Length: 404
Ligand SMILES: Cc1ncc(COP(=O)(O)O)c(C=O)c1O
Image (cartoon, rainbow, N blue to C red):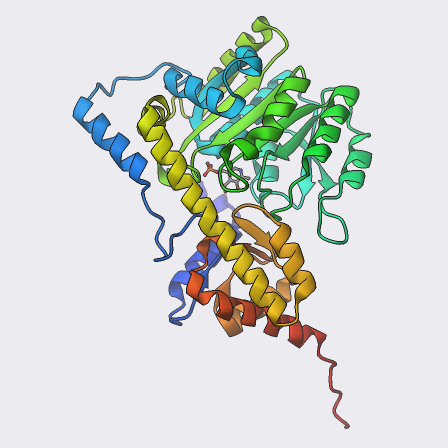
């Protein structure tokens, strides 16, 4: 049987990560994957997570199966964290998922079960796994632009394109810290998007993976909360991978907001059914950790403080890289970089230039130009800026045509 399998494509991000692993240049820098690294280059276990794990180990509760929605206390705590208590949280149902990716997939399945013909609008560029997850669920995907020529959010263009969205089409939006561009709408542009959803009848599908790492936890959740107040129906995929540092524990949540209690209950059962056929139930450990943190005032404050430190390091790295690029005569690129938010930035480099950056300067970013700002060791920022500037200078240099 297996000999009939054609050679499948491999994952480009992991391919680059393996290539990095085989690179023995001491100056090499891995800015490919979206993980937070501290100054020593490690992805730490947060102290609040450690403490919660100790408490859980002492309690040594049973490991019996959880219900079909996973850990319901986790679902409640995370819904309140995302939407705030009261308000739209009252018309929400939530199901624990296998991290943010699992939430995206379960919600994609829900869309397909409800409206198999619906189109899901996805930003261009988008998180690398958005389109594959949606298509794997059988959905049609349509791209819409995200940035204007100056590298900022293209509000007019996006709103113009979304005028073609039909009632019950779904528009995938990242609630903050857009991956891969780092370019987010301003508050008034989010308002205009909400107005477009209400007028056009399209359903916002918000992917939240980086809240707390842009402008601060509450600020990063403002757009999601505002949308939830305005629209009758909304889907939210929440990841705890980055802001709790629980990458490998696979912790997340799918939240559905509906106009009535009945529709929300149906949606929850549909999500449970989808999970049942995919993996049955999500893993408990990480969800119990997050619940322990969110339900304890002291631990919650400690987690928030650690999250702020992580955010501070990302912001400092970004500002420093921009300052060095500016000092190297790249003021325009520096300004655009400084405006971006969250873990990622898109360098203004072509795939060929990204390859040159990798070959000549040992800097690994994605072929599309994305780099992980949270992965840069602070003392290496001058080298990184020099590498970027050298690649840009080489592209600007007039080609010398030697006489025959
Ligand atoms: C925008 C976005 N959404 C969702 C995810 C999924 O994250 P996870 O499945 O690790 O929680 C990621 C991960 O990088 C992401 O960048």
